[in-house]
Image (cartoon, rainbow, N blue to C red; front, side, top):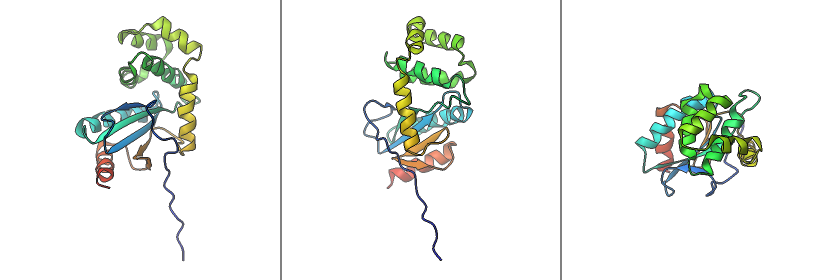
Length: 182
């Protein structure tokens, strides 16, 4: 009797300098997250990934890619494009953190207030988002996620291999430690 081969999903779009990364560039473990700023599960993973980076500061680099599920989360795409507009001004991670820490305030009015809190020009950013200036970047991440087998959020890859375990802190620590020792 033969058993079916278990196919492990692999990242199809390699990490590049255009990706948003936090942590040492030469870290032995890279965790890639495909996330949606309005997804409550991504919000839960956010706190755990933040703590993972704190506990494994020399071991882990976190890469964030956009995967807004617009048919479920009506503000996710706008939030992603706003994060990219902030990135163009050197404030991606500040915007990223604000978005996850204010998930219940992603409507355009509150989003503008968040942009302003970060010291960014809200009218300018809103204009860029309205014109779709950063839509291609968000779409590129989304399509890359589809090509890599992403079908929900959050989806994590650890050193280019899909992490099908949980995203609570003990699971993440175990996955990172195992990858660091490979």
